[in-house]
Image: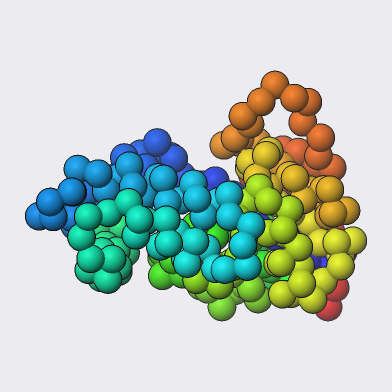
Amino acid sequence: MNTILLDLDGTVLPLDMDLFMTIYFAEMEKVFSDLPDHEMVVKNVWAATGAAVKSTEKITNEEAFMNAYGQLIVGDLDEHKRRFEAFYDEGFLKTKKSVIENQWMQKSIILLKEKGYNLVLATNPIFPMKAIHHRIRWAGFEPSDFSYISSFEKNHYCKPQIKYYEEVLSAIGKKPEECMMVGNDVQEDMIVHKLGVKTFLIDEHILHRTDEPIQVDYQGNYEDFYIFVEKLPKLN
């Protein structure tokens, strides 16, 4: 094993997801408040995101989202795109209030880098790259700390589609047996075991939507993951 795939929200970046979503949509609504159908923005964003998540076409997630979103709105799509850009430059920054500081994940990633592991940010690519970069920095890192970052603009599939993970592995040129996925979402992150990728479930902010038994290789909180990383061999 030489590559660690890391989820972002709830893993690299511990956060209060309810607070994040509350601030996220409240700030987004402000950006569209002067438009005729502004009260439909949140509903339309949810619907278009759902379409992107389910899409199996060989188009980017951004294209899938905008294709669906454009069919739902009354006004000009380009104007909406400009406002989304403005939102991610300003209003989105207020979601930082939802971040929960956690030294163990920071220490784990620093140690993994010191030991020579390849780090991949395998975040669900439903956010633009600029929003992902903001959150990477809130977690205490730089985008350059990761050899690959999945994003809205670049990727063609979303979690929990197995095609998402196949695309990531292809992009980084790694075989499943070379990798481990670390995440807090049973359905979206741990599904990668179907490809033969080892899994570590962070259960401190666990997301589990069914009553099915959890099947993972390793499980624990942030400190447990650090202890696990301490025991990994050096690669350099």
